[in-house]
Image 1 (cartoon, rainbow, N blue to C red):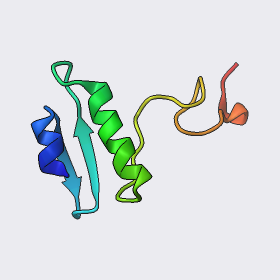
Image 2: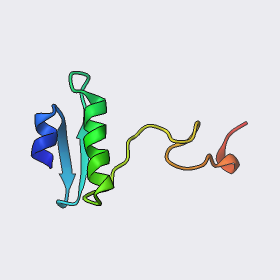
Image 3: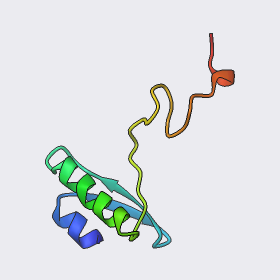
Image 4: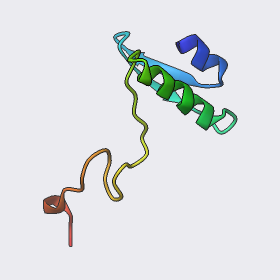
Length: 70
């Protein structure tokens, strides 16, 4: 899988052969990479997440209103 992603223009670094961080540079086709990861996830080969916020104002979770300033 990592070889295929590298062929798509990504680079990666790993942790203990289980967790990997992918870098998708502007020269790579981001949507194609996401489509491939999604296909693998659909087939229960892996799980992935992006660093795009899913909920505005937070990262991967509902905003914590108690810790907001103001």
